[in-house]
Image: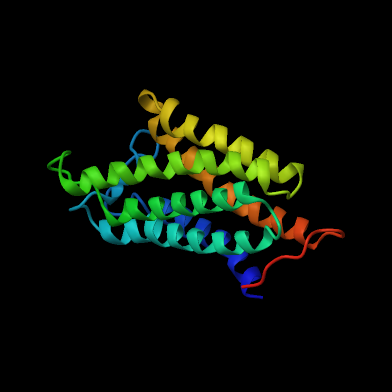
Length: 206
């Protein structure tokens, strides 16, 4: 039961994230989802910046890190690569949350909070990519699960790092975040389906 509840938390995380994005222009009408990075809305000094960071980054990241424990319990007898992969995606989730803990400093790009925010953003996608590879190779949750891992592992860094150019910056980053959240939700669903299918290995209980 506890594991099933944990596996449902990605939907709650996505709901918080989407709700925060929908309200991002409240108090800051000049903010644009097309050209502005999402973290810019949480810059210190803007109206409700702290609340925005909590709703969009901190709470979703913590929920997904916790959901990773539910994913871990469905792996059963999966090998070390899958277990390391779970740790890496949980690290990615914690790094996502840290982006809200350390908001950008509008007056100094070299300030400690700005540096820590940039570090958290880098860790978010850098930890996610090898986590996807290891889970695809070792999770033993079927071809759909492995395919979801490969697609997310390839597209998230491409959208977050390599695609954003000019007016494409805001859209590309939001697509990367959306795909990341999508993987968590799809992975949770596929893991439940695979774990409950006939012949699946027993899973650990938490």
